[in-house]
Amino acid sequence: METATHMLRTGRRGTLFEFHMALRDLRASYDRRGLAWSLAWHDVVSRYRGSILGPFWITLSMGLMVLGIGVLYAKLFSIPVQDFLPFVAIGIVFFGLISGMINEGCETFVNASGMLSQTSLPMFTFVWRTVLRNLINLAHHLVIIVVVLLVYGYWRTANVPLALLGVLFVIVNASWLSMLVGIASARFRDIPQIVVSIMQFAIFMTPVFWKPDRFPDRHAVLDLNPFYHLLQVVRAPLLGEAAGGHSYLILSIMALAGWAVTFTVFALTRRRIVHYL
Image (cartoon, rainbow, N blue to C red; front, top):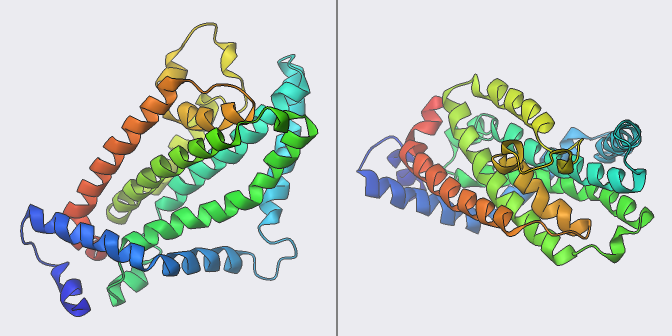
């Protein structure tokens, strides 16, 4: 049966059949979720094999960046450090999660070309591999946020359940973006460079290093910036503030429309991805 499924990737049986096979791939990836976790864990362990601190080297460097930018920009913008440093810390950590999932998503299928060409493993398995790998890295970086919230007393007003809901919105939206660029990158190898450039531009256009109240009125830089809303639904609750209902509405529409488009693209290109590689 697995051999037959593998052979069907090279044939076309109509659009409905393609969607059926894509759904079958999704269900099969859920049954092998343990494999996705093992691959993600192996990626993290192998990257830091022989290192004393392991992934905490990135946490240490990110912590130093948060401290440096938080103190310096607080002085430049004349903002109290206790207000600005937690804002920057949460922004850097979660924008790092978003950009990591999207940038690494470009290599989702390319790095798995050997396994995809020799086995009939579900392709969604490698999407979850990328997502889980970045969530493992996030678990290390959360140390920075916890320390900042404890030091400056935000733990008293932080709405953790609402922040966790925001994290779910981040994961759901970043996942379809990761998969979409992964499919595009399998076909066009220039896509990773384009995506990296876009994410580098986005971090400066998003209130990561600056506060949105710098704009006296609502501005397109905020309202039309999906990364702003992704950060807002996590950062605002952790700082004891309200994210705004429009952010949840925008992210809900993004998730539904994004996954619909991404799954459609996957269904129509699934049988050709192996040949792209």
